[in-house]
Image (cartoon, rainbow, N blue to C red; front, top):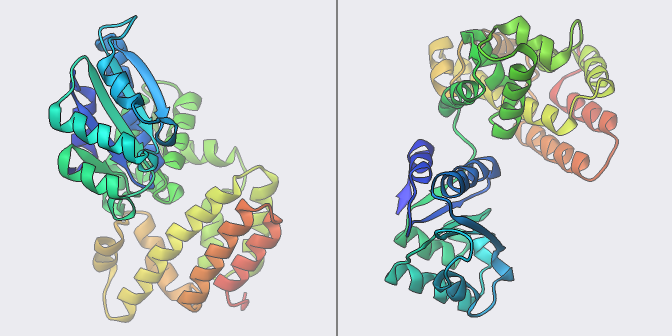
Length: 332
């Protein structure tokens, strides 16, 4: 039973009860982690259940069946949380499917996996039997609701331009978005209304270079200033992998804007296709004329190499210089 909306799965986890079996799978670990925390809080704080945690490959034959049948020694019941469900052995898979068919009592199950159904036979079976939510990176159109959700949880309010700026900054990475909103809440305090300047002050520090300027320089085709900005950000402690994520997200929007404008479209069409609002839409329209028309395949490969280089310990400045040289023509 595939659940299409995160909010629906969150509601199911928030109101879960005895006998419930839920599954969160897919590559976006932030969403599955939030869902796991939600259901754990539900059973621990509200229902007074014992929480048992296991890795899929740590459960041997008979283990899962025993955990489901044994009464909890300390609580009214047990919530069994199983990570890496795709690694369950054949015996455990059989015991799990048997429990689904027969039903469980005094227990509940929550399973997670970084894989998706097409990659795992047991996940395909679970998708047909119990509520399953697949955690993919959110679409651009979903990001405003995520910003508002996280801001509400942190008890701060964001001005419209700040919402768009956070979306631009996060590059559709929900963990990066969450970290940024948390920083804003800590810095400005509960019930604060945060505007553009208040956000940039937290992200880059007073008077400091910010990651948005780096994107502006690259897609304005200003190679020298882009390299200087990247070096400044790295010296100030900006996370390299976050810089790549932001630039990749912006690059994809710029490429789409160029395609639309070249085919005769305008800002309305660019906004509809990319999800960009003011002030980002104005930037995209500008970049569609100023950005270097680098080969798309070569640029995509450059991003992949940069990501790999950062994760394997290569020199960050060398990585960003190479990336910037690929994305700019060197005319300025």
